[in-house]
Length: 313
Ligand code: FO1
Image 1 (cartoon, helix red, strand yellow):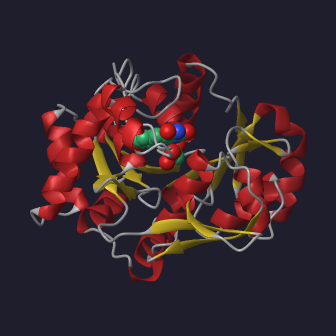
Image 2 (tube, rainbow, N blue to C red):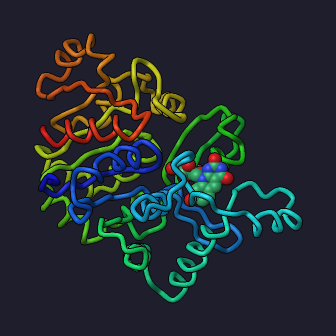
């Protein structure tokens, strides 16, 4: 028997999809909603690419390449290889099946549909029962300003430059004017639990919670909000979280991660190996319910176990 209750996730790449792999096993998918980051979206070769939205589309349709946590398992790269003959500097790998999604989405955008509407069409065609909701239909974009003065798109930093540049600043272009889609309001209001997955707090969760009305809505529903640490000890579970935190004058510490979320969460999960600092955190955040569990999701059974613990909160 699967558990009841409606769960809303806030997430971007890797950490949150890994957790959802576990939760899918114990709750019905129609009870899962994901509010997803869109600030990684990029237009290349005229195609609008929405990597985090696609990760969830592929995850829920069992197509996701779970080694990389992006793209389609077993996809081929004929088009991309041929493209490289013309654009020798091509740097964003596009699979053949993956390309079909970018083609369809771009065409629908040109016909006047918005990202939320197109995501719903894609999800329906892929027989997905869960709701995948882009955090806004306005274009927002994470920009990385390097110490040597370049201002580049997140994907240029992450994929083209392999995160090998010193960062001065990170900002989200367009965030001030980003409007919350109506569905997100009602999903947050009707949720039994709202879970901030262990995705990057600056570039994945950051843009979502920087949309003013989403943050207000979360604050109003604070008693339902739980976050999972993206770091264990003083290291990120994956990706450049620590490097990004430094640009916001934050240390790579659990305490500093909590400081990003404290106004709208009531419960925070740390790894069981960090149990020794639980008291210390409680002293700083006396109103926060601190729990510990194995949060390093090396396989689906660990994700499922974490999911079960989360549902008991
Ligand atoms: N990540 C890479 O490291 N290299 C790539 O060439 C690459 C291509 C790509 C194409 C489509 C897509 O949806 C995602 C893709 N990603 C690639 C992943 C992406 O850069 C990031 O991991 C996410 O934006 C972070 O969530």
